[in-house]
Image: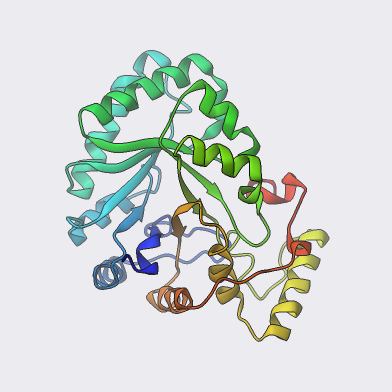
Length: 287
């Protein structure tokens, strides 16, 4: 039986860059310590991207032989005639830097590129070829606009979708979405489980009264239950059985240990009143 730890995929956006609202990054020594800890705890998935600076190169120094790595690629500024060459070149560099033979998955990083129907069709055709050549095991997309999932899939089939899911953002709980995902056997990777660090932050630094009031009310509710913000975020995830992997970024090894501590507890039901219905608030790009 797999442990709850194996459900996690470690996000690496802050391995070479300050990322999220907490703006903390790892150094090379801490990355090696973290990777060593992951091996011991049976966490074998890593989530990275070609746009994450030197992250992939730094990760490659930590012996990723036992790890499954998902990477993301951005094709926004790539001419359609150069798309195949660009993807193959970037994939070769990625595999070389990570010192592995294949990726677990390669995802389209910017869903806006799916609006270009001709370009996206060619993109997925190339990824399908990469899968046949066993350079990648799966391919898919990373999205914010969850309501468009069915449209995206109807145009181009894929194996994986990565999307936000947290106490404030529960769009994945939509019954029609869940039914669609199950029917098409799509693997769901969830990210932003702390809402870009907002739920964990003690300061009210966003100039948005709606978000801040919801955050304050959630904290009051958790205090009455004697539950920390981190515990609530982790245990909340266990309510959704559709989730294949939980992508989590951490600012330290200590934080990761705290997160894993709560995987041994039962799922936590949190009132719907703490959910944002307006999609504007759900996309951190609008903050």
